[in-house]
Image (cartoon, rainbow, N blue to C red; front, top):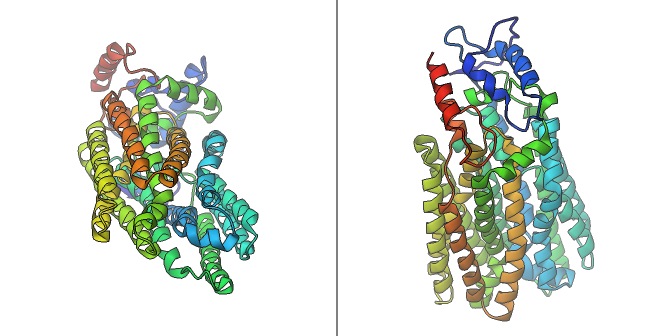
Length: 509
C-alpha cells in the first residue's frame, strides 16, 4: 500500500475479475435478480484497480485523508459544543429566559428528538448522494443554527433559541453517522479503527469544551441581566464565526472518495453499479442480522446513559455542591477528556488485535462499575472524589462510542457504514430521551442517586446483550484474504460455511 500523490485514477480497458471476487456482487442491499447484472458491471469497473500481479485490486492511501478527518472532527466539535452549552448553564439560562429547568433540558433533548425521524432520510441521502453533500449539509446547518442563536439575546426569546437549537439538531443528523463512513472510505485496514476513534473524538472534544468554556464565559449574574446577555452574546457570536469558517473549509477539503481505494474491502464495494443498489433492501438486511440487533440495543443503552448523565450533570453537582457551577463544568470536562483518551486507546487496540467483541464487553462491564462508584461517592462532600470517579466513568463510557461503530461495520459488512452507524445513533437518541426524562424526574423528586441507579440497572441489561453477540468479522476477513464472500446481513446461523470453504479454495488457486 502506497500514498496517493493525487494523480487521476486510470480506467482499464479489458480483463477479468478474479474468480473468487464475482460472488461479491450478491450483497450490500442489491435488489433480488440484480446480482448477475451487477457482476458484469463489477468486472469492468474492477479493471481500473487490478494490480499487475495476483489479481488483487490496487490500493493506495491519499494524503487528503488527514485533512478530511481534521475538518470533519472540527465541525463535529462545534456541533457538540452547541448541544451541551445550555445544559451546563441550566440555572443561568433558566433565569435569563424566565423558563423552567425542564424547558432548558429540552434544549439538549431536541438533538435526540430530531435525530430519530430524520436518520433514515439522512442515511438514504448519504448512500444516494454521497459523502461530500452530506458533510456540507451538516456543516452548513450547524453554522445557520449558530447565527440564529445570535438573535435570541434577550429575555423572552426562548422560542427563538429553541428553534435555533433545532436547526443545530438537524445538522447533527448529518454528522453523527459519518465517522465510520469516513474511516472506511479514506483509511486503510491498519488505521481504520483509529481514524473512526479520532472522528468520534472531535464530537467528544466539543462536549468537553462545552462543559468547560460556557461557565467561564457566562458567569451567573442574576442581578445584571444586561451583563448576562453580553456574555451570552460573546459565546453565541464566537460559535457562529467559527462554524461559518468550518463550513467553507468543508467545501474546499471534502471529496466524495479518494482516487484509489484504501483497502481491498473498499475496492470490492466500489465495483458495484450504484443503479442496482436498494436502500430499502439494505435496511431489511440489517434488521435480519441478529448480532446487529443486539448491538443496536446495547449501544443505545450505553450511549443514551451517557447523554442523560451529560445533560443532568449540572443538576446533580449543584444538588450536593451548591454554587459550584464552574466545577460542574470542569467535572464534565474531566469526564469527556478521559473518554477521549479511552477512545483513542480502544481504537489503537482494535487496529492491533481486531478483538471487537471482547473489547466491547470489557469496556461495557467497566462502565457499569464506574457508574456504580460515581453514584455512591457523589454525595460524600469531596469534589476531588467526584473529579476522579467522573474521569474513570468517562474513560470507559465515552471510550465505548467508537467501539460500537466499528463493531457494527464489521458484523454488517458490506452494508453501508452510514446506515449501520445511523441506526446505532437513532437507538442512542431514543434511549437518551427516555433516560433523560426518567432520570431527571427521579433526580428532581428523590435524589441524583435514584436516577443513577436507574441507569445502572439498564447498563447491566446491556452487558448481557453484548455477551450474546456472535462475532463475525466480515470486513476483516475480506481485508485478510479469507474472503467470506456471501456476506449479506443475515443471521449468523445461516448455512454459509460450505460456500466459505469453497471460496477459500478458489482464492488459493
